[in-house]
Length: 350
Image (cartoon, rainbow, N blue to C red; front, side, top):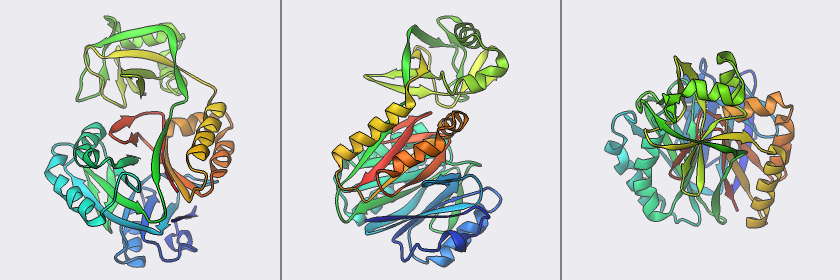
């Protein structure tokens, strides 16, 4: 297969599409003011070609913070569709995915699902896994901005746009990168949570905001940037799901993912992210000596952290050593059946 990245910082879709050739699948990463226009133009430009889109920044070896980016695949079989009403009942539309999977005829070895979601990610992924899990189909995706996604030339609110992509020339595999590690002696039992609002009220019976401030010696105003270096971690078996802080809510903390009463949390600290990224590249090269493409989703908070540390351009160059690498800056990342924060997830095509 082949992946081609095109972009226009001025927001010209025709400029971004130069060199794309005749793709068999396209992803659109646009800005809020031009999204509707770009969705219409893309459908007219590539009639009948499956596509999904969202509002977000794109990248290959360069960042495109505004404008428009296109990521096109050839040498694949693909289908695109949407699950609607994801805040209430995404399962109502799951038959669409079942039919799409039968149509594409893929297997766990050569097929991946890429999705762009407007919210309620954990519920969406649980729903989707009822179909993909039975077949061992892996998934990578993320949350776009402004509560909008597109599929095949139509715009949707409260929805998850997805594509099933079968690599005609080899395997696929998904990866997740975590640049954080647990701090010593910092374990908590969560309580006074609000599942609907993603509120974390107390840790070991004390106000969550107070606990966070006292351990890290930060003020209210510093919490929202300190989370770049010190998010919470939710223990999930041998894995740790990162829980980013979204806002301060009185003496509580609003998070980007759901925390429940009695969940065991730990406080995380930043590891050697340069070395961790190099190890990810090394592992991918070991698993895939011959790579056609890598599509990734990087968290907005990782992007902000890397930019503040002067590392973002170096990071993109490191990933480019794998070959064709492109992706999306997301507001939450999807890895198979899990909704994660402050992470990088990717799919590698042989």
